[in-house]
Length: 165
Image (cartoon, rainbow, N blue to C red; front, side, top):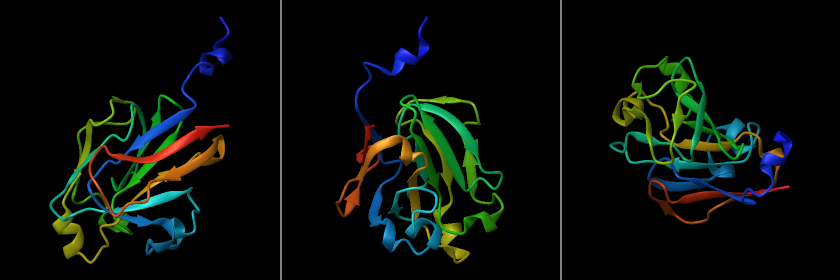
């Protein structure tokens, strides 16, 4: 009846999980101006090993966008966070080569469900940086966005905590 009330009673804190394992890189150290300056939203980088090639859903939600060049995916969580996982830097230039999706736009995902795989060795051999930024695209909809501060992360470890306004 009152759909606007449906958000009341939800947890005030939203946890986003790491979609990959690897070394964490703070945003300002990501060697790409758009990510380093937070142009797309606050983010953190994950530098995965070359053989870690499966991206897991960082939260339950809907796959709302897959780039035509397959190098990035956007998930809108059931808690209304919009999370972008970008595979490598400048990998748009690969034009989809080395990326394989298990799901498609509009599919529902559960936290930890495999979304895509990528060929890390191919990406590196073509001269691209493997750093994978995780971006909170709609951060302005939250009071705080806090990324963990640790050196290494494993798949599904907490990577970000959002607090509602």
